[in-house]
Amino acid sequence: MPHLNQLKSELLSDGVISPNEVARIRRHIEQDGALDFDDVAFLVEVLGEASEVCPEFDELFLPLMRHVLLKDGKIDLDEQAVLVDMLTAGESIRPSELKLLRDLQIEATETTPGFEKLCQAVMAIPAN
Image (cartoon, rainbow, N blue to C red; front, side, top):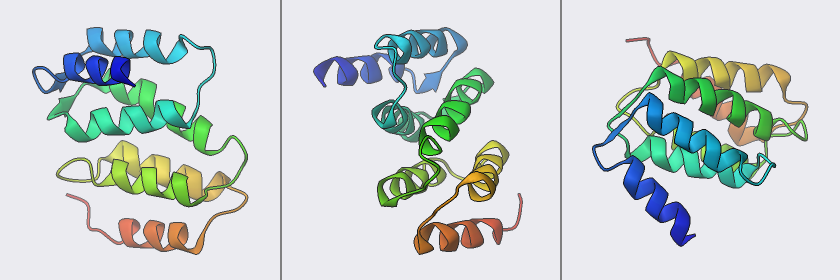
């Protein structure tokens, strides 16, 4: 964990996640060869603390999140919580995050009632 805290601190030193930093993140998460929930949780933390992320961050993060959350086909309470963290990370919900939520809603074979309520609430928010 200290290694992750140090990496997060270095990535967020200027508040912006740049393409070079995305390459560094990619190397870190691919290091153990297994993409997992801890990787997603780490990236959600980084997203929540960054003032700005580059498009390359979304290109890495969103497919990874989709893959990990749908690995067993279910959206459970822990996965629902990390989705809430992602959706509340910035000042507004980004179109790429809405697309991910829609994809998860369509592709998940089992979800919690809270996930369905979350989707309904988020989809009811007027676009900026």
